[in-house]
Image (tube, rainbow over the protein chains, first blue to last red):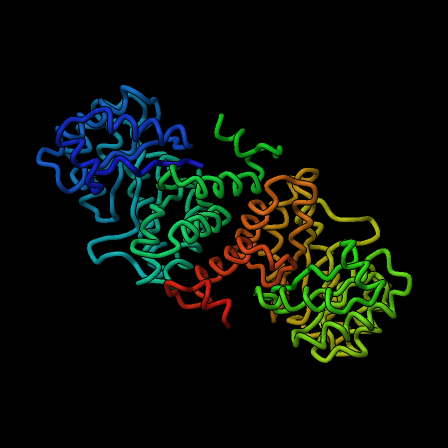
Length: 262
Length: 262
């Protein structure tokens, strides 16, 4: 399971302030904590308050890379901001993200090709987020076709069926679960399937319980990557246990510790 | 989800003693607690220490039915003991269980027909518990065919792919998960799919975590019934949440309480 830590995001006020004031220790602490708790990759998003997003991206990537060695997921709606990150990432990066819009895909897959990056493809287009498995699948096919056109190895493509908040779109959770299974069958080699877990429970009570239950169900359906808060210990316990039950790690009494020490 | 409470089992010394001494209050307390915490059915097993299993079965069924109204799962290797229960159950019972052995199936499906009972069919035969999805599926087909021969509605058949302890047969957990999905496709109407969850974690640390994670994954794969300890609150929380995410109940902030009050 590829675990992308979500906490370095300028949407959070602490992070936005740390970026604005160039407080490297705050960002580096978040990077170290997330990796220690199981993140195999870190998302980097300077958020909506940044006055110079390209420059902030550069500073964030450098600041993070000074303390951890994991690959980064460069998270921005602006291609030039992503490119600033791609220029200096030491490990192979993930571009977060493209939609299924042809113009966006041309830009993002072009960047991916140039910088040998992986790509997260969101199954949405200008008409918005789909409300059925069928339309998710159609958009996923569009993204896969474009990736292949650009010579991207489909293993390097992360398809995201897009989770919606449970309290406003409850029936979509099942559609997403079923989409995961279908996405994996779309091409060979199979694409990665990913989602941002916290979207499911925006503004919801019992957040942690619902998040870890859904993550476990999604892993059972073939999810291969996830963006989440790795500091949520119960969530990571559920993820580690689900992988154990899928026979990805060998059982021993201390399987949780063993995974974390890896 | 059909939840069968497992605690009235003479394998537990307290229960064995209560049966031997005819301490109705102990049994009735277990019955009431399990139903209060979410059991929709109760398993009744007099265990290995019973000196007169047929008589003990009668006493147990009467004792339980005096305080709760849920159907019972009559759990014995002996057909005559099961029949003692079938004679006096007020609600439609489940026979727990038959294997795929032809002689056993003839006896059990014969009883089921005579008493209008449901049946749990274990996908095993004289050669033991299978170690692959393929052999589980073959045995399941044998059971379904025999059930149909006896005019049993396939909705009244509970197929059990048989969980094995994780510490001795770890790869079997995945085989069971995949079997669930395949069993549901075996016939129309689809059979129920069930397992005894605690088999997974006999003698294992982190029992509760592993049990609830696996149950969640199994529900995502189509499990429709389960034998478990309904007094394990975290386990029941996971079950209720998984059903919510499958859109079986409407989300509200107090969805856990709402389910339990039903």
